[in-house]
Length: 120
Image (tube, rainbow, N blue to C red; front, side, top):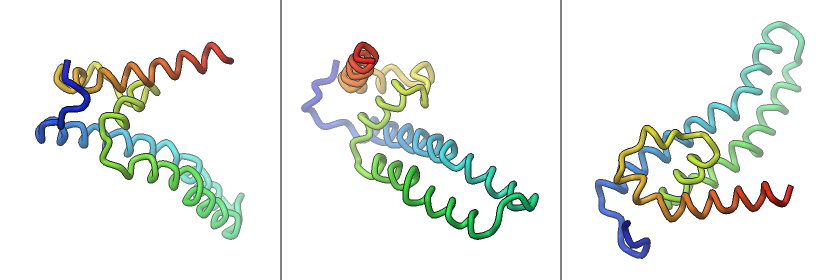
């Protein structure tokens, strides 16, 4: 197992960045689904332009802003680990080297999830 205090090798950092971008894309797509439905409602005449505009602003300042903040840093191993634990990314598609690098962060997020579930 890699010592978490060691610098991540460039090739591994690039792979983690790729996975982080994939998670960001997937979460963004999911966050935009309600807006896509709103556009369909507007097209069908069931939603006015002002209401559509309000929904667009709410999406931009709410879910999309949170995602942009979440994925702003270059702490890719934590972004990817959280996405794996949340079911956004499939660890079965990742290389052994990436999983080894993610092991400490995965353990932390899995521990947090277990604590939340026990508390519920």
